[in-house]
Length: 113
Image (cartoon, rainbow, N blue to C red):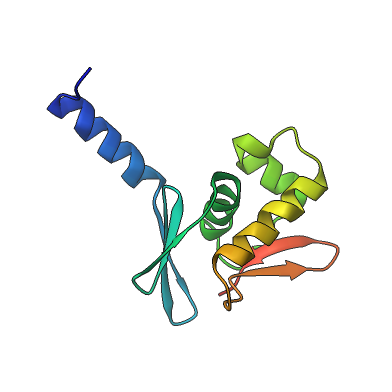
């Protein structure tokens, strides 16, 4: 079934509504779909890790516990802490050489500011 213009516009608005724009230090970060765009460079990221990045990017600098992340990321609602740790690890590997996500020992994770 082909998309009509109304459906295409709805899909486009949905994607834009989920896009997060934030400054990370002097860098511009955009989280959209299955990717992050940092200073114009596209980094493809798996769904779980990009969802974690999107949650952290909505409030840069705020520390999110594993419970907070489970609450904010629907696909991680029923997982244990190890699954969240793995999502963060995959996120870090997807955007190598940058310290986008910081671990705050015994508290959680935050997006670097």
